[in-house]
Length: 273
Image 1: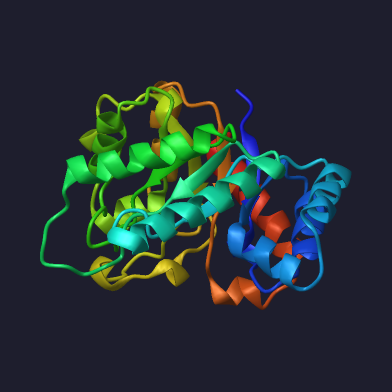
Image 2: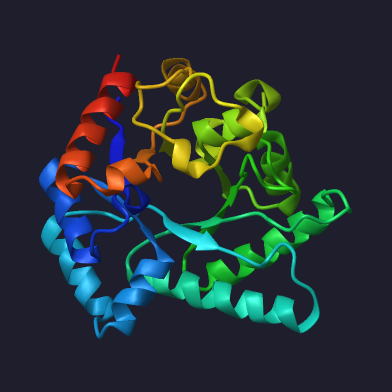
């Protein structure tokens, strides 16, 4: 099977938007995963969405996902309405860039109340309704360090209870490791319900409970069972995008093209065994 290889722009963060797109194209990626914040920054500096569309078209890159929707899970009252308005604006922006799926991030608030799955599912369903106006679907993300949704089974339960058969979750080996969950916790998760596979590795010997995004390293350079993960998602029928998502400041100081090129080589070495 042929994977769609994607570069998440967090991997080469300090580069300009133009240079990120150029690096992805030159390195041989088919897709690029953009952050809403960098599009907004580009607009604030005088650029337009039309400029971005042109750059993407010239580079031959698709945008399978954009990151991220915030505030929808933990806001109340007027703050919740403002959060939904912001999510609507972002999903409309995604549609203009030809992007059909966006990452919906869980709450990072440390509150004494445990996760209310039904409430989260209701809120997620509100995002689905908003996105449907633009042909954009939210993907439920679990973050290993989120106080609310740190495990894959929590994210999958939210998606199931939302009642929409097309919505998906974001799969990420770092967050599986960080939140101490695995695909074994979601035996009924099928490939078509995985929206995107973020890809990364983690060095051996780290204390999981205190690890942040910045510890991520190139696939195959750490101790995560990535080939087993690839084998399992293939068995479940996933045939989608693999997106290199690293936040390692060591890579940020290197040439963006070289980082992108090496990252693609290492992803292929793991995924095409």
